[in-house]
Amino acid sequence: MANINISCIAIIGKQNNPLFIKNFNPSHADLKYHYIAHTSCDIMEERAAMKTQDMYLGVLFSMEDLSVYGYMTNTKIKFITVLTVPDVIIKDTDMKNIFRRIHAAYVNHASNPFYEIDSEKMIKSKKFEQEIEAIGRGRALEGGNRNSLPATAP
Image 1 (spheres, rainbow, N blue to C red):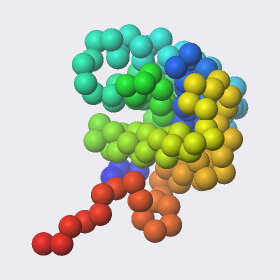
Image 2: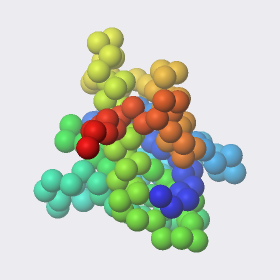
Image 3: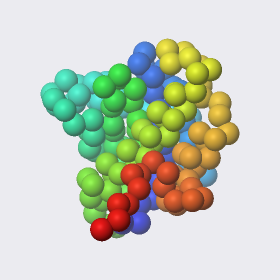
Image 4: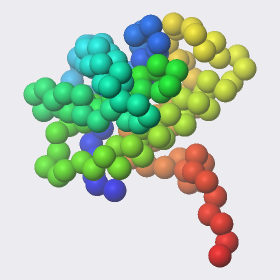
């Protein structure tokens, strides 16, 4: 996998309300990423209307030194990843894998019987934040990626 420098991971709810925003880039203010996430919502809904099956929406837009990628679930939860523009080309397969990990972390969190799916409250969970932190920093959680299928014996 290419060396992907993630600046921010945002999760936006069905009503375009922020559920979780994690800033990995201390040189940019959190407010900047709230703005980017908010402006991405309309673009994501337009792109999702044109696509039929793929939840990965690709590059939404670029601004300054940042590229914004999007992914929307079939339940209209939006995942936004902001990357610092790298010197290398980012492959769609690498970005799809990152979004699959974010989606799996969200599904694990939403599977908690005490989590209100349609709540407009920000996600406050140490475990969820640790999983997003691991994705954003480009490392797997202890014990490997528990969201992947086990290898089968030959």
